[in-house]
Image (cartoon, rainbow, N blue to C red):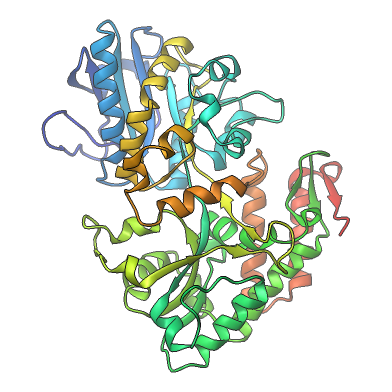
Length: 473
């Protein structure tokens, strides 16, 4: 059995920590919680194969309990309505990359597989390609709230075979967060909205040349930042160029190389370094830089602009490590513009998480019945508020409690209508790594054309020459 570190949760009592080498599950049966230790799962057989037990695996961040509380509430209601059924929580305490690996190890065998898994849209189609997940098209199309889900989110859980592999729950969108006081010091307007990349650079130059001590601009870049660099950074630029330059052509089902938009995006990155408009490369390559940004640079007026996601204000709530209750008064938001203002004029990337059914599920209908309880309107409103995320559902977005839980929730929810999703196909994680390498090469002095050529060669090697095409623009 895979070695998965987990927390023990005994409802309704307080949180109890397990030792790091001991695995336990919260079991909810007829609304009553019990704890089942690893020793009870003799021979790693687990409870898979028992049609009365539903096991759900999910990522848990350290001692955080938001997901556990969401699932536990739904499990208590479900088991009370179905006393013959038991729900077991399988929290995987791990970093994002380790979570993907450990979750895949669990799903790989019928002896250890959960019945439901919490899947990131980033990795979902890779797991489909590896054979870990089964299609749920028949179940999804009969789901009461399927039509409430944003079209872009539906696309994100649909494989190249046209089958549906998950029910989207959360999403996120991205924009430019900017500090009004830094802008004021640079003579920039409070209602700033750039119409092009050049407008961003001009604002950054104004901050650099002012009396402000703030770093003008920040965008995640480089391999230590992982997917943040690809999605919050590079793709927010690339998807603002001609569609012929994007990562993947969905019609031909080929990856795009030789892209002028790719080179232009790297050239933008080169400019912000060459003109001292951002932090030094050493700081950008610090894997913990995001913590410094959220707890120090923005709150202390040391950063002017940040391209980042809808969720970051959770770092400033009363329960956060460093609350910043004043942020709505000094932070504003602007849409990320396209390269020259063309196309839609603005661009945002969306991601998010959902629930999927592994190939080795014990009873897919029973598993889906619990899934429906997990994603009821009321349950998802509560979860969105607790987790500070953006919903993919119209019924949740229409709820007054959802609309008022954060000063920025309406803004970021509206962005979803025009959002792009990554081509999160099986090859995407490797392609994403190649993007990060190209960014890092430019950060350390390599020219955009050379870095783009290296990316083209790497992608061709990843997917094969027959699966790439030259950009037409």
